[in-house]
Amino acid sequence: MGMTKPKLNFSLLTRPYCHQIFVCLPGDVEKALEQLPDTSARFFAALTFCSYASATADLLSTDEPKATRLREAFLRAALVEFVSTEQTLKTDLQLLQIPKTPITMLKLEHPLLHIMRVLRNHEIHLTSHKMSHSPKQVEMVINGRTYQSQATIWTIDALTTKDFGDRKVKNRYTQSDIESMVKWFNDAQANWGVNDLLFRAICEWAASIVNNYSFAPPNKSLDASGGSASLS
Image (tube, rainbow, N blue to C red):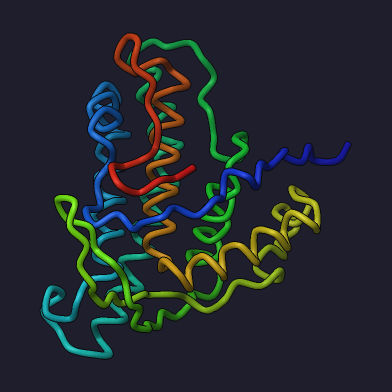
C-alpha cells in the first residue's frame, strides 16, 4: 500500500502585506501554550534562534564571514527546535492526561509547514544551504506613520525538486505539489527572507496546536497573525 499523500492547501500561502518587526508569538497563542511547558520552551528557543539568523554582525559580536556562518548555525538550530515541538507535544499531552492523538505538521494542510520540515531534514542530515543577503527598500509603519527604510533580506541557496528527492519525502507528495512548494519558497524568501518564512511557520504551527486542543480562551478564536504580519 502506498503512502497517503497529504492534501495541501496552497491558498494558505498568500503573502502578507507586511513584515513582522518583533519575532514573537501572538500574545494569546503564547499564553495558551504555557499549558504545554516543554513545548512552549521549544517554541521560545526556535523564535530566539530564528531572530539571530538575520542578526547584524555587531549583534553577533563578530565580523564577516564568521557572522554569516553563525547565522547559518542559528537557522539550523531554529529548524531543529521547531520540529522538536512535535515530540515535546506528545510528552506534554501525556502529562496533562489529554487522550487525543498528537497532531503533526505532516497531517496539516498548510504547505509552509511541510516545506520547513523538509528543509530541517535537509539542513541536518544532508548538505547545509549557504546564506547570502541583499538590500531591499521597505516601508515601515510605526504608530500609523509610514517611513522609508532599507532592510537586509537573508536567503539560502534556492531549493530545487532534488531537495525533495529522499524516497520517503518524494513519495509523500505529488510532483505537482513539490514543484509548487519549491517555486513558492524561492519566490517568497527573495521577498521576505528565509528567517521570516520560518517565523511564519512557527506561528502557524503554534496556533494550530492551540486551536486543535482548545487551549484558546472561551469565545475567542486564535490565529497566527502575530500582530501586523498576516499568515493567511
